[in-house]
Length: 354
Image 1 (spheres, rainbow, N blue to C red):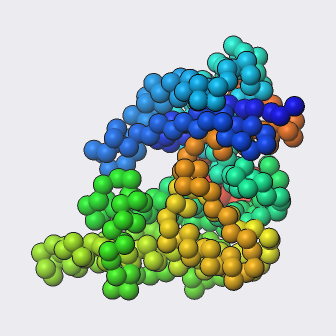
Image 2: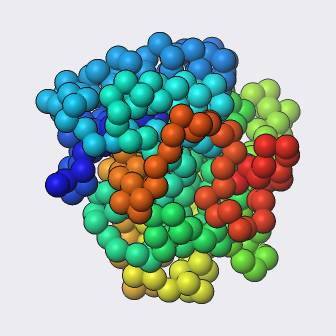
């Protein structure tokens, strides 16, 4: 029998539902974004996001079922993002999944959102273990050696801002609308990446850890220097700053990836997360993989950003290992993939952030 799972994702500002089969067939994938709801605030407002998830989840699930041509009775399980993420949104998804499981008797599997991203290459390309995953998104940046559906070894990651967060903050500094990543990339196409001497943080240190906070600050200083010298920014100034910032991020990610591959030779380098949609960064990483003799994999753009197909697939992988959850499943704002690694971004009462 081929397993068929419903996936539910609501960890940030995308409400998503999908129906996925064990053979990797995505029967449906519905994503309802919230960009317009948060546009006036310069970023995601957790309370607004949580309310939108609660309002949109049932419609997304109904649409996913309709598009797949299946009903709940045709499913073999429900997988839901149980963390990490904005806790209000995570709870909305978990409660929805619990309700469906309770009402239908379907097995319930809570999924780590990061595992969804990390396992996406197995969904899209059916690759085997092990492989190196660079997870780059708005909230996370990690190098992971993936040895199994629940076997992740974190080699390194960001010690401050994630790349996507740095893109968003840079966009805000330069007066660009959110989401910042696509806006900065679009501006950079018209810019000169060599005009501003922006830093490449931590390249002078060994290892695979990254830092993007100082790069963002360098953009701020360059902007302020221009404003003081000429009374403001020209259109070309902004494009050049975007190009310089993007080139610096790409250079840092490429060099750290080169080191990670050299020290941890595996047949495949995969990249996932929203920042993986950036064409310049993809090209840089593809070159690194080619130099190392590794196959490069990046998911289709619609599977780079948050989606429920990856959650359904991660649920299927965990289900095949025998994992099941019950009505005690709780949402978790923090949930490191590698439980043995030291916290990258600090810890509090709720545990390590990443």
